[in-house]
Image (cartoon, rainbow, N blue to C red):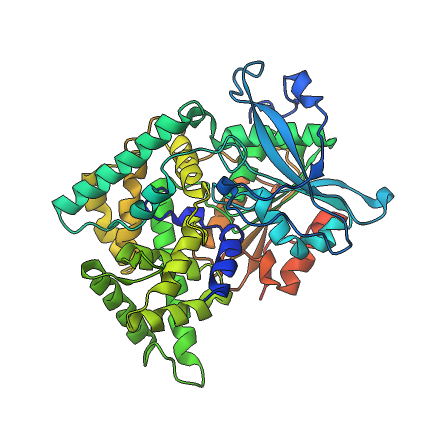
Length: 518
């Protein structure tokens, strides 16, 4: 969802790395392989991983694994244009932790995509690798920067200084003058993407990334793709299953994107999802034995937040020097904190400080969502997010379209409705036409795919899991429900979810569809 603070870009695992650091200081060819035999026969050169690039978010090289082994990185060569596989190539950055168990028990490589679109798998997998140590007993853990992301021909748009201004702008215009400013800034951002990455932009669609994954499967030496997709990673996995159903091995989709929705419907669903998460946060605060520092009732908590945002629209407060906390930045920060119940304490602290005129914590939360580190450098998550979404999504929306849809968005969420509705104009002046209204994930003949939905998920609402199961087709999707909070289920630590996922990936045990964990 392209907008000045793209909520879809903030897959929990991809942004929590930046958040923790910041707050600590405060059907196609289903039976065939790639046609390009040369690329499928390439040998990867695995070496110790370097420090993440600025486009990947910066920081330190990954720490050693619990058993003392080290993460290894390599570059996979792939066609720039899959319609011309013998033409120009790009390099795709990969990371791997080899299986820790007995060699005769190894199943293959388990490939992860953590979402976004636009998140760097090369930085995210080692940051959360401890969560997947049990899976590592039988799999090499592998992730990658998808094309257009990080080190993989990363899309470049505006400079760090320009992005500071871009993410401060008023993303919920109140009059024609503010609307013009928003549209002009969006047009300027999109033009910068075309100027700096025009050759790449037509080739960052999800279908391209799915073909990359099949090449990856072949080069890694697996007959089948073993896959763990989170958030947007579920859409990527579904597209892969559609293109290569006979190549699907054991696959898990967690925090599931609804594949039946267009960009407008997806944004409206997120408005409802984030509002539900905010409602749950307010109820949780006011239901505890001690007094809630944010209000006397859940409605009081939400009313005070709404007033804060209204006040910030007219008068920002000091944030992270020299920047101020604007209404847009505060909304982004609040949304970021709703991705996990573990972040609710930061939201409470950030709101308390903001009511006293200090916007630092909410701005750090917003920085986390937007991919900005403490040195003022941005990863390319926002640029990649817009580029992939606009290449995928066919609809283009005008100011008149947004104004007509505002009442429905405001009804879905008084707090996030305007913000998400105006985000629809992000692709209006994009240089590349969108591919389709929504992805095709029908995968007749595929092996079972475990689809895990969280009832309290703000970013990928729970209903999307059932839609994914239905769209994959009879006998393919296996639904598992987690009655919890936050974006995703496996990383919640819930034993029931973990046992079900691990049982399938490690032992091939498919749970009964409809199983519920709480």
